[in-house]
Length: 243
Image 1: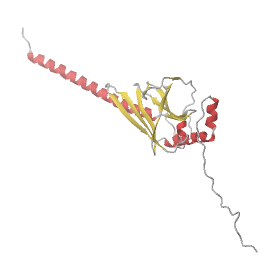
Image 2 (image 1 turned 60 degrees about the horizontal axis):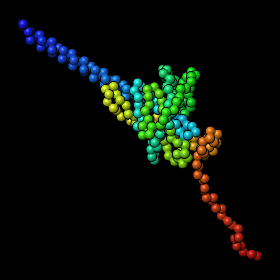
Image 3 (image 1 turned 60 degrees about the vertical axis):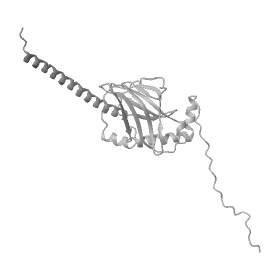
């Protein structure tokens, strides 16, 4: 039996080369998908919804990716301190319709703090409540959003200015490696500040407490403002020269 060792060696080399090429292709493909995933997560987190309600200021973090996201921390960064938001356990399903780009006029209105209707479609909102996480880390499933809260009572004595929203996200990329992503959002501060100022006006006027009472919620504890009255100069009893 004659064995062609040269042909066998060439075949083995070709097989190894093909395996290396396939492994390299899969590695590059996985890395490219992971980079695209990281970019998609950053974009998704930056498109948060900001509003207010009976319980305080609310912020919805969206997940428009195929991977679940773990929010390890989210806070409002002020000029004096950072204020951590907590998960309420409220989850909403995202509508999987392509978003159209806003027009120049709509962009100008958004920058001016105006409300812009991006769609005339009417649909039911699918929401449900989950148990808030005990460790503070909230898991957001693919194509859902979750609500985070800055409590109303905390805003009674608010004496700061919003600088940015800071979010820390943990996720697993396509190579099964656990990654941590920090997202800082500061280009929507104007509308957030207007929302906060309006909310504090509702607190100070008592309107928010009236609404909370209607829904059988305890009223906010608003300390009485005691300011010293300016003393008027008292000229009574002054002595004069009699005739």
